[in-house]
Length: 225
Image 1 (cartoon, rainbow, N blue to C red):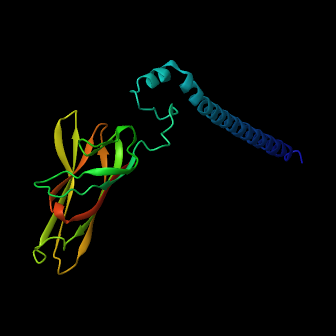
Image 2: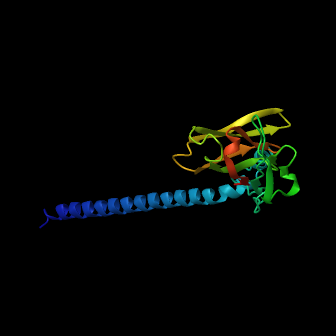
Image 3: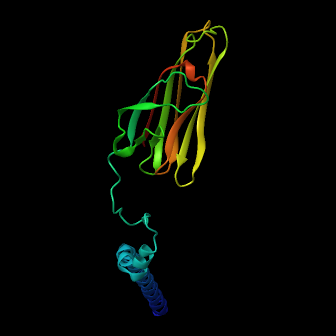
Protein backbone atom coordinates (compact mmCIF):
# COMPACT_ATOMS: atom_id res chain seq x y z
CA UNK A 1 0.00 0.00 0.00
CA UNK A 2 2.70 2.54 0.80
CA UNK A 3 4.19 1.98 -2.66
CA UNK A 4 0.86 2.63 -4.38
CA UNK A 5 0.25 6.04 -2.75
CA UNK A 6 2.66 8.02 -4.98
CA UNK A 7 1.04 6.42 -8.03
CA UNK A 8 -2.44 7.51 -6.92
CA UNK A 9 -1.21 11.03 -6.32
CA UNK A 10 0.28 11.14 -9.83
CA UNK A 11 -2.95 9.91 -11.43
CA UNK A 12 -4.98 12.50 -9.49
CA UNK A 13 -2.61 15.23 -10.60
CA UNK A 14 -2.95 14.19 -14.28
CA UNK A 15 -6.75 14.28 -14.02
CA UNK A 16 -6.65 17.80 -12.63
CA UNK A 17 -4.35 18.92 -15.48
CA UNK A 18 -6.69 17.44 -18.10
CA UNK A 19 -9.70 19.18 -16.49
CA UNK A 20 -7.84 22.49 -16.47
CA UNK A 21 -6.88 22.00 -20.12
CA UNK A 22 -10.52 21.26 -21.05
CA UNK A 23 -11.73 24.40 -19.21
CA UNK A 24 -9.07 26.46 -20.99
CA UNK A 25 -10.18 25.18 -24.42
CA UNK A 26 -13.84 25.92 -23.66
CA UNK A 27 -12.95 29.43 -22.48
CA UNK A 28 -10.89 30.06 -25.61
CA UNK A 29 -13.73 28.82 -27.86
CA UNK A 30 -16.29 31.07 -26.15
CA UNK A 31 -13.94 34.02 -26.51
CA UNK A 32 -13.54 33.38 -30.25
CA UNK A 33 -17.29 33.06 -30.74
CA UNK A 34 -17.87 36.34 -28.87
CA UNK A 35 -15.33 38.12 -31.08
CA UNK A 36 -16.93 36.73 -34.24
CA UNK A 37 -20.40 37.80 -33.13
CA UNK A 38 -19.14 41.30 -32.30
CA UNK A 39 -17.47 41.58 -35.73
CA UNK A 40 -20.64 40.55 -37.61
CA UNK A 41 -22.82 42.89 -35.56
CA UNK A 42 -20.46 45.84 -36.17
CA UNK A 43 -20.38 45.28 -39.96
CA UNK A 44 -24.18 44.97 -40.22
CA UNK A 45 -24.62 48.21 -38.31
CA UNK A 46 -22.21 50.03 -40.66
CA UNK A 47 -24.01 48.73 -43.77
CA UNK A 48 -27.42 49.89 -42.55
CA UNK A 49 -26.09 53.35 -41.71
CA UNK A 50 -24.06 53.77 -44.94
CA UNK A 51 -26.93 54.85 -47.30
CA UNK A 52 -28.07 57.53 -44.84
CA UNK A 53 -24.56 58.87 -44.50
CA UNK A 54 -24.13 58.85 -48.28
CA UNK A 55 -27.28 60.87 -48.88
CA UNK A 56 -26.42 63.47 -46.29
CA UNK A 57 -22.75 63.80 -47.24
CA UNK A 58 -21.59 66.92 -49.16
CA UNK A 59 -19.81 64.73 -51.74
CA UNK A 60 -23.07 63.04 -52.65
CA UNK A 61 -24.84 66.39 -52.95
CA UNK A 62 -22.08 67.68 -55.20
CA UNK A 63 -22.36 64.59 -57.39
CA UNK A 64 -26.09 65.22 -57.77
CA UNK A 65 -25.45 68.82 -58.79
CA UNK A 66 -23.10 67.67 -61.55
CA UNK A 67 -25.90 65.85 -63.40
CA UNK A 68 -26.83 67.71 -66.63
CA UNK A 69 -30.23 69.25 -67.04
CA UNK A 70 -32.88 66.80 -68.11
CA UNK A 71 -31.01 63.76 -66.66
CA UNK A 72 -31.69 62.21 -63.27
CA UNK A 73 -29.12 60.45 -61.14
CA UNK A 74 -29.89 56.76 -60.43
CA UNK A 75 -30.89 57.43 -56.81
CA UNK A 76 -32.81 60.67 -57.35
CA UNK A 77 -36.51 60.87 -57.98
CA UNK A 78 -37.85 62.51 -61.15
CA UNK A 79 -38.94 66.09 -60.68
CA UNK A 80 -41.55 66.09 -63.43
CA UNK A 81 -44.08 63.46 -64.39
CA UNK A 82 -44.26 62.23 -68.01
CA UNK A 83 -46.98 63.82 -70.11
CA UNK A 84 -50.28 62.00 -69.98
CA UNK A 85 -51.75 63.51 -73.15
CA UNK A 86 -50.37 63.11 -76.65
CA UNK A 87 -48.97 66.33 -78.12
CA UNK A 88 -50.08 65.23 -81.61
CA UNK A 89 -52.85 63.04 -82.94
CA UNK A 90 -53.98 64.10 -86.38
CA UNK A 91 -55.80 62.42 -89.26
CA UNK A 92 -56.21 63.89 -92.74
CA UNK A 93 -58.12 62.86 -95.86
CA UNK A 94 -57.17 63.75 -99.38
CA UNK A 95 -58.51 66.42 -101.68
CA UNK A 96 -57.98 64.91 -105.13
CA UNK A 97 -57.33 67.63 -107.66
CA UNK A 98 -57.72 67.08 -111.41
CA UNK A 99 -55.46 68.20 -114.23
CA UNK A 100 -52.32 68.17 -112.11
CA UNK A 101 -48.99 67.61 -113.85
CA UNK A 102 -45.51 66.82 -112.66
CA UNK A 103 -44.97 65.44 -109.16
CA UNK A 104 -47.46 67.19 -106.88
CA UNK A 105 -47.72 67.21 -103.10
CA UNK A 106 -51.00 65.83 -101.79
CA UNK A 107 -53.57 68.33 -100.60
CA UNK A 108 -55.43 67.43 -97.40
CA UNK A 109 -58.36 68.37 -95.26
CA UNK A 110 -58.40 67.73 -91.51
CA UNK A 111 -60.67 64.97 -90.18
CA UNK A 112 -59.63 65.47 -86.56
CA UNK A 113 -56.66 66.95 -84.74
CA UNK A 114 -54.79 69.71 -86.47
CA UNK A 115 -55.10 72.08 -83.51
CA UNK A 116 -52.53 74.75 -82.65
CA UNK A 117 -51.06 74.83 -86.12
CA UNK A 118 -50.20 71.13 -86.41
CA UNK A 119 -51.40 71.21 -90.04
CA UNK A 120 -50.11 73.84 -92.45
CA UNK A 121 -52.42 74.12 -95.44
CA UNK A 122 -49.99 76.34 -97.35
CA UNK A 123 -47.18 73.77 -97.30
CA UNK A 124 -49.67 70.85 -97.18
CA UNK A 125 -47.72 69.41 -94.26
CA UNK A 126 -48.20 68.04 -90.76
CA UNK A 127 -46.14 70.17 -88.36
CA UNK A 128 -44.48 68.34 -85.45
CA UNK A 129 -45.09 70.31 -82.21
CA UNK A 130 -42.73 68.44 -79.87
CA UNK A 131 -39.53 66.46 -80.46
CA UNK A 132 -40.16 62.76 -79.99
CA UNK A 133 -41.16 59.48 -81.61
CA UNK A 134 -44.15 59.53 -83.95
CA UNK A 135 -45.96 56.85 -85.91
CA UNK A 136 -46.76 58.18 -89.39
CA UNK A 137 -49.07 56.38 -91.79
CA UNK A 138 -50.46 56.78 -95.31
CA UNK A 139 -53.18 54.83 -97.12
CA UNK A 140 -54.14 55.04 -100.80
CA UNK A 141 -57.02 53.45 -102.67
CA UNK A 142 -56.06 53.21 -106.34
CA UNK A 143 -58.43 52.73 -109.29
CA UNK A 144 -56.57 50.99 -112.09
CA UNK A 145 -59.38 51.33 -114.64
CA UNK A 146 -59.87 55.06 -114.44
CA UNK A 147 -57.81 55.94 -117.51
CA UNK A 148 -58.21 55.27 -121.23
CA UNK A 149 -55.20 52.97 -121.42
CA UNK A 150 -56.72 50.17 -119.35
CA UNK A 151 -54.47 47.48 -120.73
CA UNK A 152 -51.23 49.26 -119.93
CA UNK A 153 -49.23 48.62 -116.74
CA UNK A 154 -49.85 51.44 -114.31
CA UNK A 155 -47.20 52.44 -111.80
CA UNK A 156 -47.69 54.19 -108.48
CA UNK A 157 -44.92 55.67 -106.33
CA UNK A 158 -45.24 57.86 -103.24
CA UNK A 159 -42.67 59.46 -100.95
CA UNK A 160 -42.89 60.76 -97.40
CA UNK A 161 -40.67 63.80 -96.95
CA UNK A 162 -39.78 66.16 -94.13
CA UNK A 163 -38.61 69.75 -94.08
CA UNK A 164 -37.47 71.92 -91.21
CA UNK A 165 -36.69 75.62 -91.01
CA UNK A 166 -33.55 74.77 -89.03
CA UNK A 167 -31.80 72.85 -91.82
CA UNK A 168 -33.69 74.23 -94.85
CA UNK A 169 -33.56 70.94 -96.74
CA UNK A 170 -36.18 68.45 -97.89
CA UNK A 171 -35.33 64.91 -96.79
CA UNK A 172 -36.91 61.65 -97.98
CA UNK A 173 -38.04 59.55 -95.02
CA UNK A 174 -39.51 56.55 -96.84
CA UNK A 175 -41.37 55.57 -100.01
CA UNK A 176 -43.72 52.93 -101.41
CA UNK A 177 -44.25 51.55 -104.92
CA UNK A 178 -46.92 49.47 -106.60
CA UNK A 179 -48.15 48.60 -110.08
CA UNK A 180 -51.00 46.75 -111.78
CA UNK A 181 -53.28 46.39 -114.78
CA UNK A 182 -57.01 46.94 -115.08
CA UNK A 183 -57.50 43.48 -116.59
CA UNK A 184 -56.08 41.83 -113.46
CA UNK A 185 -57.89 43.87 -110.80
CA UNK A 186 -59.90 47.08 -110.82
CA UNK A 187 -58.43 48.57 -107.63
CA UNK A 188 -55.86 48.00 -104.97
CA UNK A 189 -54.78 49.52 -101.65
CA UNK A 190 -51.34 50.79 -100.72
CA UNK A 191 -50.59 51.27 -97.02
CA UNK A 192 -47.41 52.47 -95.39
CA UNK A 193 -46.71 53.09 -91.69
CA UNK A 194 -43.48 53.61 -89.78
CA UNK A 195 -42.11 54.99 -86.52
CA UNK A 196 -39.89 58.07 -86.85
CA UNK A 197 -37.76 60.16 -84.49
CA UNK A 198 -38.81 63.69 -85.41
CA UNK A 199 -37.81 67.16 -84.30
CA UNK A 200 -39.97 70.07 -83.28
CA UNK A 201 -40.88 72.05 -86.38
CA UNK A 202 -40.51 69.18 -88.86
CA UNK A 203 -42.99 69.44 -91.76
CA UNK A 204 -44.20 66.07 -93.08
CA UNK A 205 -45.39 66.11 -96.71
CA UNK A 206 -46.58 63.45 -99.15
CA UNK A 207 -45.09 63.63 -102.63
CA UNK A 208 -46.76 61.66 -105.41
CA UNK A 209 -43.79 60.71 -107.54
CA UNK A 210 -45.84 58.75 -110.08
CA UNK A 211 -49.46 57.72 -110.66
CA UNK A 212 -51.38 60.63 -109.15
CA UNK A 213 -54.26 60.00 -111.57
CA UNK A 214 -54.79 56.54 -110.04
CA UNK A 215 -55.69 57.90 -106.57
CA UNK A 216 -59.36 57.55 -105.65
CA UNK A 217 -59.12 58.10 -101.90
CA UNK A 218 -56.26 58.54 -99.46
CA UNK A 219 -55.56 59.31 -95.83
CA UNK A 220 -52.54 60.62 -93.95
CA UNK A 221 -51.90 60.92 -90.24
CA UNK A 222 -49.47 60.86 -87.34
CA UNK A 223 -49.59 60.40 -83.61
CA UNK A 224 -47.08 60.72 -80.79
CA UNK A 225 -45.91 57.54 -79.05
